[in-house]
Amino acid sequence: MPISRRSILRTASIAAPALSALRAGRESLAQGATSVATPASGQMSSRALLDALLATPVTTRLFPSDTPEMNVVEWIDESDTDLDGATGGVILQTGEDDNGNVMGPGVYIVHESPEMARAVFDIQLANDPGIATESILGFPGVITRIPGQVNPPGADVTSEEFPGSSLITIFAGPVIVSAIGDGGEPDANDVRALANLAGMLDHLRLVQAPGAA
Image 1 (cartoon, rainbow, N blue to C red):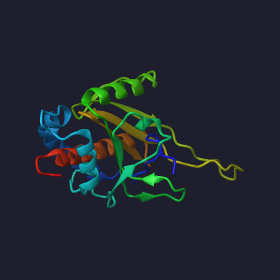
Image 2: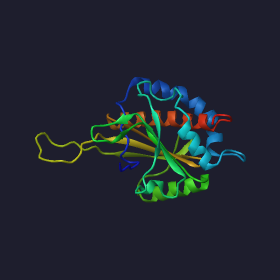
Image 3: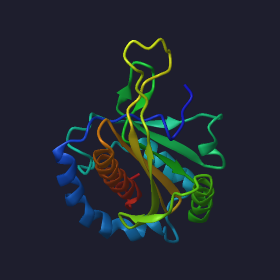
Image 4: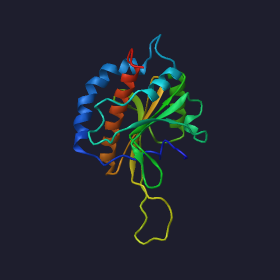
């Protein structure tokens, strides 16, 4: 199945528990941010980190409470340029929609080093003029709002419909993390994406903890 980081993921609508989960997770994320963003000597290699992400079930409670059960799936797609030069990718999958699109809160792309992840992040940013880097949960990142597509009633078209969404992309050490929120208004999508990012960063922290893998 063709996969694109900008379009593969679909999540449930915004819910009130997402806000409380986000508030609860900020302190934990702040405590773990340094070890995630700047891997110290002796930490696992990029291959070991990818294997650990694939082998570790998602147990963090920082995802919104209405998030369906997630499966950890390796992202393999030689045609997707987002994976160029990467050690590999990981999808947090909650299911598939009627068109076979993967559903879930986000993806991880693991690179050989923090420097490589930053270089790829900067290249992607250069391809999106007008989008500026900002601090998101303490990490350099960007928020991209993607317009939805809804076919007019009775229209004789075959194009796929999809809701508008917000995509947050940050880099944390050697990992580029992309979280998505959709199904609501732009502000609600932003909050959902931010809540999903909180869960994904905490899961990454747990995976990197000594003895986790």
